[in-house]
Length: 397
Image (cartoon, rainbow, N blue to C red; front, side, top):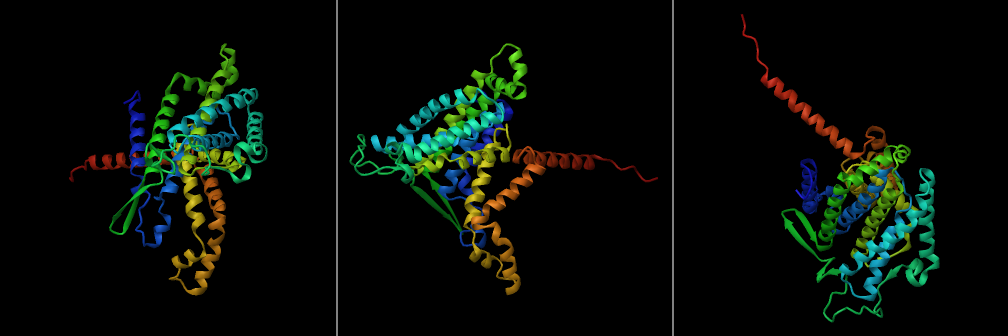
């Protein structure tokens, strides 16, 4: 299907099903139950899943295929956001104008940054990309304030030109009249499911770029990038210059990041310099490693894993814990809450850090390796059961 082999087609179908039915899958608990705290089927969080999934997919094309670790990809994320908001200010709120500009602008900056950074490899490349990202952050925060609006952030005001804005047009991001923040809620018994226009728009974009990443991974270009990662010196000895390939991978990866930044502005028409900070670059590195470096679906899983813990565990507070453990005696209840308190709320980073350590230690291949192990275990159990059922007993003498 669409130039994919059987295995990749199956993977694509699975991703499509999971993405389209996410409002159901991410809301397993009734609204009024104590476990509803762990539901993740609300629009803001689901949009973050797919947007940062796009960001991680693009980063994986660079890091997973070539082995070049960039600590500066947040710069392209911010550039994409600024581009889309400027289109809102100049034209109108239709996202169709801003997203192509976000991809193009991020690609241009990626060519310039990659051309310089890729003159070095290893840790020196990582430091160069980090330096460029921090330069971009400082330029956006305090130097180019007429363009970025500094620490306040770039947003749309009533006196902006918006030359294409019609009299009856929506005054928030939309796609030809389909307003991004509009939602439809479906009540099924004790469950409530939310279907959001913005989420499905971002999900369709993610499916498109995920398909594109599969084609890149399976292409001769992707094989060349794997050769760069395997042994760049040996590749050079064959007479091939690896730099054009690594630069192309860097630019493609930067364009993915620009698209993700543009989608962030499409959901919330605001762009700030904080999206360019080095912490955002470090976050996408964690997503890729946690999900599985060099795998197709790993970055998406890693992005969902981190964003889930960031949003769900940060909302849990002592009041919620007391409700959960109210069945315990008072002294024991307070002790349990005291022990769990450092791992929730503002301490969710501690929980995530521990989980990340466990994954790295026991699953070096990330969450994808964990899924593969479970699949092998299920198959081995199925084979053992078949062999047991097929065994014949000797007749008694």
